Image 1 (tube, helix red, strand yellow):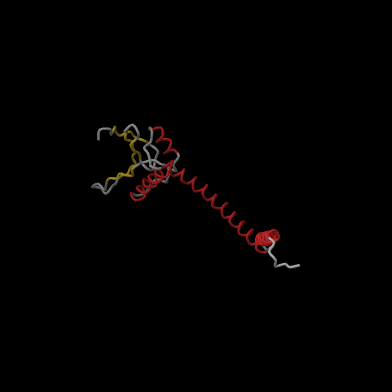
Image 2 (cartoon, helix red, strand yellow):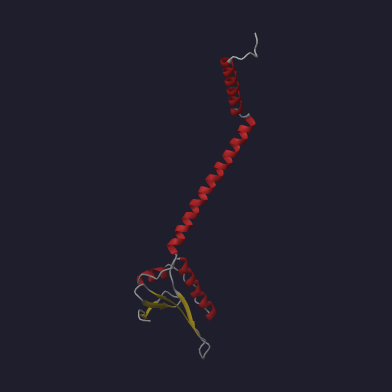
Length: 162
């Protein structure tokens, strides 16, 4: 029997068998390689879960910022009064510096809550005294002011034509 003799059918079967053998051999992965790939997959899955949680948190922070930006005017005096009532009452100021600091703290709290208010002062006068107040212009163009150490709100004027 001569194996080297040309037999097209046998040669096709041999080539097909060799091809299938190579295909099956290349499809096999060593157990160690499989475990390494599985560990990499699990690490990537953990990273994906962490990134998705971070994205969710970031989206919540963005929504919170968008609710406050840009800062807006108070709708009416009732909204301003309610906001002032929700602010901590500082101890009465003993000097102008502390009094103005209270006004600035209110201004900062307003911005953090998405509102616009001013912290203002005049002075010193001839006696060395200061006058310090906070103010806000409302949606209807009314101007209100108050002492930063109290919740007493005063109507100033309509600023529509200024």
